[in-house]
Image 1 (cartoon, rainbow, N blue to C red):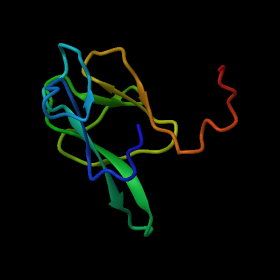
Image 2 (image 1 turned 90 degrees about the horizontal axis):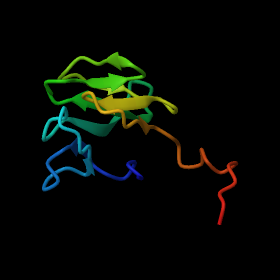
Image 3 (image 1 turned 180 degrees about the vertical axis):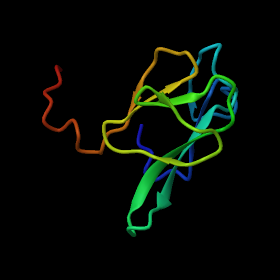
Image 4 (image 1 turned 60 degrees about the vertical axis):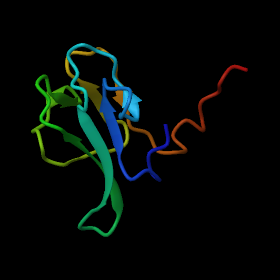
Length: 102
């Protein structure tokens, strides 16, 4: 999913409002949001914010603090609640060298 041109990308289990459904009972209806923000360096960077979910948002296996933006880097792995589904942050050209079967 391309996120760079979206104002925000909402993760959660309420399919009526979220952009990316998490479909797991331990995830909140509106669990976390990914935003692109202008960093102190002058570059626009992706950030994730846990929306005070009960079971947390995990970045590379570590639970992040709720209601605070956490900067993301290429290759970072996000998990929501106790779901085993992993979301990996990649640049647009990250998979260009990988051959995909027709």
